[in-house]
Amino acid sequence: MSENYEYINNNTEIKYTNTEYPDFYITVEVDGAEDADNKRKVKHIFHEKVAYYNPMQETMNICDKVWMEGQHVRSDYYSTAEESKELVNTLNTKFPGTNYQKYGKNLISKFNPKRKPYNNTSISWYSMEEIPDNLKEKYKCNYSKYMSWYGLKFDLTTNKVLLKAVVDIEDIIAEHYLKNIYMKLPRLDTRAVDGAFLAFLHYEDGRVSSYGDLYLRCSDIFIKEFCDLNNLKFPYDYSNKNIRDNVWIWGIVFDRITGEFKHVKAYERIYR
Image 1: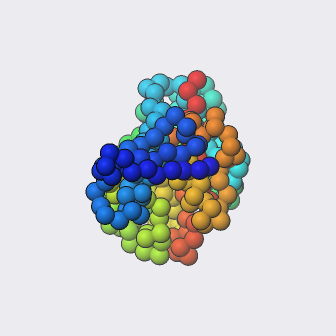
Image 2 (image 1 turned 90 degrees about the horizontal axis):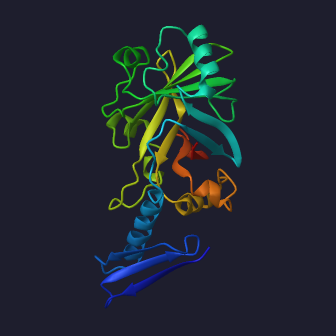
């Protein structure tokens, strides 16, 4: 990979190109005297634009393939998909009392433990609504900026259930949880939009796991540079452009207590 910065139009604009995307470039106005600031601005706009280069499609027939540590670790389907029937039946049998197909775009999958804090084969289920008040109370959630979806992780061995609270990147409670790592979280320049949000795992007794997730939309180059900087394995074979062109969001797993980054995940959306 090689990149190039070029000042154009009497040095009023800066242009960025990268050989990983030979048919794509970004040009922005120069708004500072510092060369490093101008280069950071145009490159971060590039990271943002690449992330949204392939628009999302409105369809009920999708599969989100999740990649981590160079492996395909699980596949998420909408709860109404044919692949979801058995899992929905399992949830209705072992964990009754919830309408797991309330929203057509609820996501469900079965996965084996590939990282902490998961210990056993589990079912992951996401509901496309803010966490209901009864679950906020049960799991002792007191965030101020909830996103409009949440997750439950059902351990099929112990029958215990973890709540995955999804919140805005600027949630005050979240910032408190992240005091040992907040300033190290990779973010695009504030002039660009990375759509970042956070997720925290809550136990039934109210404890919050030390493991959290940062999700953001950006280019694969941004994530590759982050992985190299932090000695992390890229989630899939970096040379695979077919996967690259279908990744719609990235997840970064961290230990909020030690301040360490642990894993990087890529979510490859397949339209079927």
